[in-house]
Amino acid sequence: MRAEKERAEPVRGVDLIGVPLDLGAGRRGVDMGPSAFRVTGLAGRIRALGFDVRDRGNVAVPNPEGLDPGDPTKRYIGPITAACRQVADLTFEAASAGRIPICLGGDHSLAAGSIAGVARALRARREQLAVVWVDAHADMNTPGTSPSGNVHGMPLAACLGQEPAELVALGGGASVEPEHVALVGIRNLDEREKGLVGRSGVRAYTMSHIDRRGIGPIVEELLSVFAGMTGGIHLSLDLDGLDPEVAPGVGTPVRGGLSYREAHLLCETVAGSGRLVGMDVAELNPTLDVRNHSAEVGAELILSALGQRIL
Image (cartoon, rainbow, N blue to C red; front, side, top):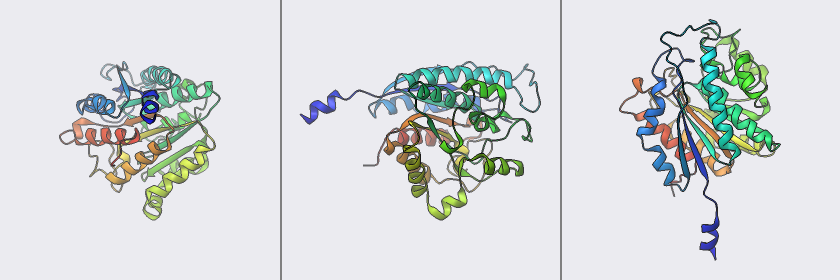
């Protein structure tokens, strides 16, 4: 009887979405991130966990050569928005069908699209989305506060309904409420951004908090809070949230990040909640990596978030 029940359980689905976007970053190379993830055999490894996997290929992103960056406070915002609109449509389609979209980046601007799409799917069934944002940076600058104008420092602000307006429009306004967002692992914020985070209402866990309390209790706490407020969790993982010794292949490394085991425990705990509805792994730059090591780490974290267990 038990075997019959196990056979009757539906196979869960995963959609892999490549986002070769480097227009939001300050240096080239992250556009090759999706290919580096695929080289690890990611799709087959996810299938081995029992998932039905569809690789949706890459969204179309133009090369910056020959493009006019436009407004210097939000460089390349036009083509970034166009790419994120494609991402939003694909994540909406996947999440609406009960599949888990996993976006392979590419710079973190992509999250403005991925979260907008998943949030739209949850709103259609009258649920709200929670976001766990793992990053060395808060990504809450706006065109008015960014010192560089690089849009990969702005996607969370867009998800919260602030700016850039072009990315906010992808979600028809705020894709997620501040009280449903947790920043985990932040440790490198400019002075103006510190004020933005403090006033925003998001839950912010710096590396100092993690050092004092431990990653396990923090993640269990925030997941417990979100369980009563939201219909699912989107995990948006910037590889620079990890320590550079663990994931060197990123464009903006900051020492003192999550250890290998801390990152896995975070993903394992999210998997254990059974509430993962979407995921991004962003900012992989193979030109700065060592023998595709960071891509392998990212692939392993995806597997942990999908339920791969030690025992």
